[in-house]
Length: 356
Image (cartoon, rainbow, N blue to C red):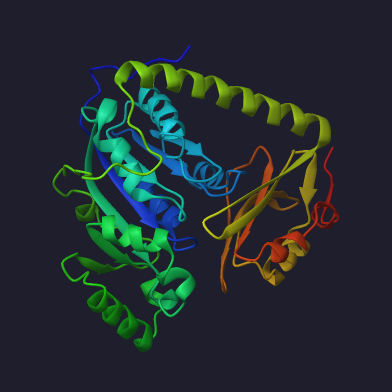
């Protein structure tokens, strides 16, 4: 049965961490969790563009911290359909975790204005204290119009109250010059700018004053329902989500793997979930992944050498060992659908063997 948030839970300090695809949002959250006070419960709500759901598995597999609760909303912007997916996830997460702090990571192709709308109006207005909105930017991408002219990228910067130059340890002098020019040309100089290395976010960047965000014009396609209507709608959303999850698990048990696709905002995603029946060859899989032309690839996989999380954004590639994963997940994202379609399920199955 769906349960409403207790009235005793109120004013949870909340930070929204935005940024375009591959900028390092999940890495930053992992660093925050690693420095969480031992006596606090923290909750993390993650939204992904792809249907597979990689980030929650990555966070769960990479963070051994006690008092960390993670909830994921895959498949595009969590504020579509009147924000019901987000409201369902927030209710479940807050009720379970009773957190001292809440971190929210929208998809890099989402609409942060709509996320702010849900957090600062209606039923969450008394429960959540939105204290800071951070936007991560990789200065190396500021010469690419696919980023700088994308509506989501522009909105992320406009909504943010602090800009974090992610992966600053990789910047050249020209990158830093481009960053300064970009900030000036886009009239963003009123927002604090910090260079961020290795995903490290200073605690002081989270502890800003609570803000009241007023949306003067209604969001197109967004209607904030009354509390009664919202409760009923969220109940139906929760039921639908549970049914979909059960159907996927049944299919995974029967077929051994699932392929799911998504598209929107000028991007395409293609992803797979493989049951623990399959164990990947470590060297062969990563040789395959690093050779891919897709602009974005990430996953959590079971190999003969253990469980690993990998992340590929452009030419950047990272891989680290994680706690045992219950399955293997791989997600590819690109603006070119053909770049994804050349990768077939059989190609990945050839890199795996029956582990049972």
